[in-house]
Image (cartoon, rainbow, N blue to C red; front, side, top):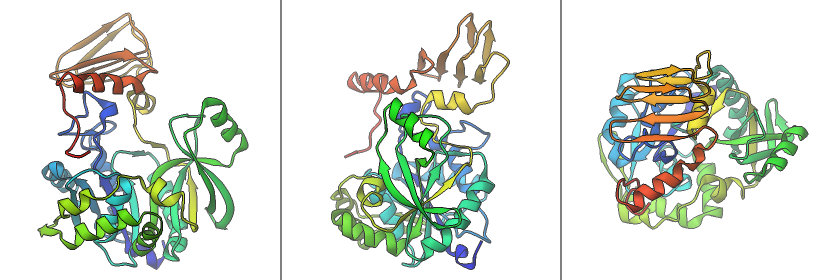
Amino acid sequence: MSQSALRITPVILSGGSGTRLWPLSRTGRPKQLLALTHAETMLQLTARRSNDPQAFEAPIVVANAAHADQIEAQLAEVGVTPAALVLEPVARNTAPAIALAALAVAPDALLLVMPSDHVIADVDAFRAAIGAATPLAAEGWLVTFGIAPQAPDTGYGYIRTGAPLADGVQRVERFVEKPDRATAEAYLAEGCYAWNGGIFLFRADAYLAALEAHGPEIAAASRASIAAAHREGTRLFPEAKAFAASPSDSIDYAVMEKASRVAVAPVDMGWSDVGSWDALHDIAVKDAGNNAHHGEVVAIDTSGCLIRSQGPLVAAVGVKDLIVIATGDAVLIMPRGSSQEVKRAVEELKKSGHITLDRPND
């Protein structure tokens, strides 16, 4: 990487509740704090991708205050000491969360913004894409990383890539919403679309300037909350009332879709957002019957299932294409291919008072 790459500060977003992976993912221990694909947790894997002092500064982690102890403990286990742990008093989506991080560093610092709960199998390809994007980001471009689409998936937003700006980096022609199946198939056939994976690289001052222009209320609330913040060691506590005044909006809607100097670095890096139990089955190691299982599980004459247990023995006999998730206090059973419907179970359980998943003012 270039000399400017030494100024890259990873920003790890760890505020999500991960309800699509209920009952394993809960308010007190969301999916980024779980070991779903590896012996290490999703957060630990994310931190290790940029744990190279020759290329990266110590990370800034933006998180739910309720998870601070778990986050610090998990990072310590993999030898990562964050430069700051920015603890959101309420959830306000990614645009304000990233603003908090951008206000905690030098204006010319390069920020590599990464969700804490994604899988990246080919870290070398990711690093190469970062290297290709760094010079443009240093010049003030807002760079997103476009994921090479593996299928006409309707669960992701897409990026239409435009004219080349540098080797491995193109101008973003436009962002498009999650398509229907026919539209997604057309995107893949056309060959100039990438999935929007929510990973970004830009200077702190470039992001804040774009936010001032396109989301001034978010920028003002974030600045006010940092100005009145207090610090306890590496923990930074933005002032709650000021931050709560911010609109809740994603970086995509608030900034990336409206700014003028936006680029994309397309990359094929074995990416998954592990956004559902189906997605976890897709990337998991499977047995001869196409079953992915973890914990105390016995599968007899069973095929195409995802079966995970955190305690009780699960015996599956003569079934196929099921998702079975067992924890100490809950069991989820549903057809594979329908895992987006977990939200229906969560909503019903919230109504009945069985579970509480939201932070205050979420």
